[in-house]
Length: 333
Image (cartoon, rainbow, N blue to C red; front, side, top):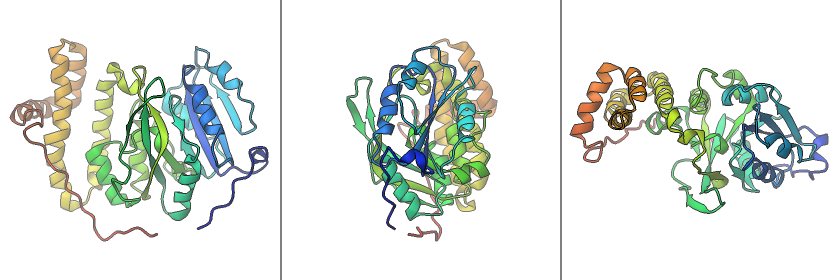
């Protein structure tokens, strides 16, 4: 299918944008300017950029206001909402049929929007897609480049659900994802009871109803640095709690033929990982974290986890292999 040619940047504000880019910001003064520039330098220019400043206390507002472009819409919160309520507020203001997310630390490569829109034209049934990444450090140096063609371009609801169960949030983070606005509206946006894994939870609901697309190109420069929420040690107990909650919701949607095997995998791998964190906190005398994680696991899973942690050498001596059911579903393209 031939895509329409993107209009010049000077004209895009006059037309309905094809893509909305949502950029949630909180105290992002160090990198947010680079994130915005990477958006404004896209080859495809018919987009709207919605920036939600979640009551930053640094220089983020001043940096954001320096960008004078008709495609930029700036929303400054009077109080801190949190990441997922902030995103839901931005979603309510979207005009475009496709929605792309970007975290304040990351950057899009110039061809990102063009490549991702192309996939949505090729697969009209896809509800969301994610792309591959280049990992950079605080100084823009490349650390790693992720694998490119490691899974199909089109994933059925069943296969996507299995991947999300076994491997967690396979898109990695918000910065790799584009969704159809109508699909997000049908599932009522992000669940605001989640504080750190709300993106994973959203993708699990979307893929329960629509196939997932995979763009086999490295279209995002994703930054790794010590200040990220995902790397904060204080987030780990909450992350374990929320991810276990998501996996529990995925189990009933797994194919009947692999459900028993999946339950074993959960016990012999996922539960051992959670138990390892508990034991590490115990060794460091981080009692409050131990108590919280112990309550999340419950006595049965914790005792089983400690026993299996010992027997498998923390999965070094034995690690279960995921079992998939592929059925007869195939890509419509």
